[in-house]
Every structure is written in structure tokens, then in C-alpha cells.
Length: 331
Ligand code: SF4
Image (cartoon, rainbow, N blue to C red; front, side, top):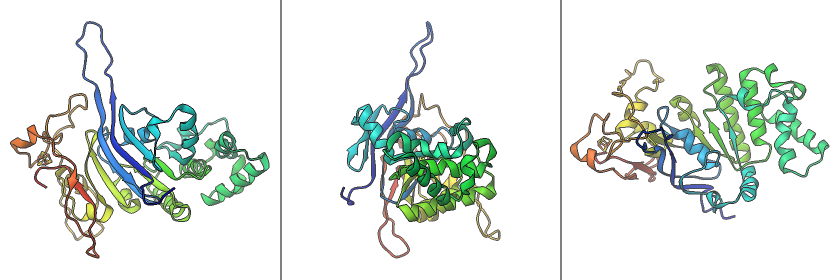
């Protein structure tokens, strides 16, 4: 497969949920959880999706794997549109895309031993013998920093961080090209979060895995990401490489989000910007720019015309041009 094309290309992804019909009530509009989302991920790259709860980042990530079935769009993996695949073909491609969930305890079967949990995908997909599977599971335990004797323990005997390491070992078992990380450290103690994030980065460096990383903790996102996409009410409003986005955010929503990130130097006064009001309902998003009801810079045109996500000039520290996409009429 050519390495010129991105590993993952998502185009015009939509996920609309039909509202439940109530007797004698007027039909309600669908909930636009994800609306016209496009991005790419290169091999070995981490793209993070950030935004408030309910902005559509988790739905986007799960749609990529078809854990929720998208309403429209295309999801190209290695040049093959996953949304056009039948169940058997999709099952085969799933070995290339694995997922790590937010709550490791809920995602691990309490009735299986740790070794069986990690061996399960190998048994489902591979033609390996039981002895080969045992050997591979031991190797995977070593790779994620679990002791070999932990193979015979049950999930409840592990700490939260160890359970997430177990989830990572299971995701790694089939040597995937892409791992969807759905808030993988937000349920962990702060002291353990850094260990798990560093483990993910080490595994990426060793195996060239790409990550689609969903998170709301911007300090974690800054540490792990190569590129970051900011979502608001089902759409991407800004997308740039990590350094550009954190150094010079352009979209007013991104600027407000990033103002909440703690600054490393306590002598530098933090200028915290506050987001006004609640996000509108995705069943009835505002016309024009979806952020206009909360934007401090909104003008009349913002209520009428939706700004496209379009390129801006940006350069890195070396002067080389960088990707920077913004959906705003004035930024
Ligand atoms: Fe704010 Fe208008 Fe830009 Fe939307 S288009 S972010 S409302 S200034």
C-alpha cells in the first residue's frame, strides 16, 4: 500500500440520530451529533479531537470504527472506504483499527483472566496455536509494563492504571495500524495518567501506530498530539498541528478553551476567558456559524452564513508552512 496517502481519511462524516416519536406530538428534528466532519491521520501520527461534552468527538471516533453507523460520509483506511464494506469485510478490517475505552473496568470481562482477555482477539482472528497465543500474550504483557504472573489474575485484582494497561495490551494484540483512544486516561488518577500517556507514546514510537485521541484534558492533548482538531456542536472549527494551535489559536472558541489550560510558569498571569451560556441543542443548532450564540466577536453575518473550515497562513519555528484550518468569518 502506498505511503503517500494518509492512513485514515474521513470525509463529510455525519451522524444524525432520529428523535423518538411521541404519540400525537409533532415530529422532532434529528440530533446532529456529527455534521460534515473531515480530517486525515498519517501513519504513526496522533490526531486529538477536543471540545466540550456533547460536541461529537466520541461519536466521530466511534463512527470511524462503525461502532456507531454513520449517516453519511466516507472513512478511507489505507485507501479503502470502510463504510462501503459488508459485515465480513468489515470484520476483517477491524483488526487494523482497535479501540481503548475510557473506563477500563467496564470494557474488560470480569469473568475472564487477564491473559484470556488479551488472547481473545488473537483467537478470534488468528490461526495461531494455543502455545503461540500464550507466548504472544506474555510478550504483550511485557510491552505494556505488566508482570507475567498477572496473566492469571482477574480484572478486579488490578489497579485502574493496570487495567488500562491490560486494555492497551488487548488493543495491541492484532498489531493494528490505528487505535481509537476514547478518553483513555480521564478515569485514572493524575499520577497514573502520565504513565499511561507515556506508554502510549512509547508504543507509537516502537510500532508506528496512529492514534485518534479523544480527550477533554488539554494538558494531556498538548503532550501526546501531533495535530489537534477542535469540535463545537458536531463540527470541526479549527485544526492545526499541536504547536501552532496552542501557540496561536485563531477561532474564538479555541481561544476560550485554551485559556483554561494551566500555564507552566506561575509568574505568567493566566488570562482565563469564560464561555458564556450553555451549548445549543444539536437537535436545533443555530443557523450560520453554530458558535454565534456564545461568540464574543459575533457579527450579523455570523447568524446567516456558516463559515467554511478553510486554510490560514501558518509557519512553524523553522519557517516551513504548516496546516491551519479555521471556520470563522473574521479569524
Ligand atoms: Fe464568532 Fe462569527 Fe467567527 Fe463564528 S464566524 S466564531 S460567530 S466571529
